[in-house]
Length: 151
Image 1 (spheres, rainbow, N blue to C red):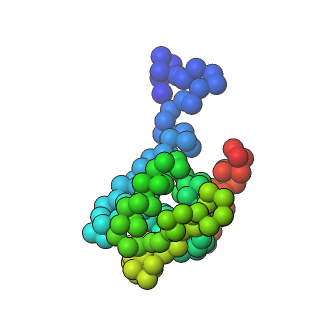
Image 2: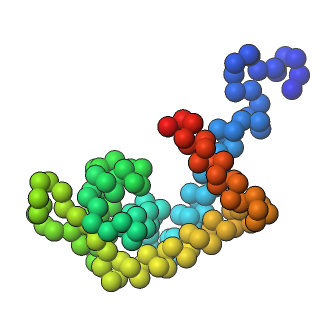
């Protein structure tokens, strides 16, 4: 960077050296790859995320699923309606207690999740393939530390 192009003190500076910019690039590249590779299964990344969370934590409410998958309650409601129309999940027509309607995967939903999870695992493997195995665990730990530092 030349003297005329020097970043002001306290600024991000050269984007090639910005952790935030590199994380955004990685997140975007991951999202594009997931969108492309999940498309043949007729799933979006948000739909897959919903299935994955439900596979690991059945019975969550719309609000709990929204928080776990980083979408709004309104968006989650649309996702749930779409997945329910495809018979990938069930939720009671009325709340059994309070306003919560617990959501669970159907047998078809579990099969869809199994296929989608394999696709996502393959994309993640491609993403970190250049990292030596011993650095992968460190990379994940470092990312978790970054989240904790800002959370």
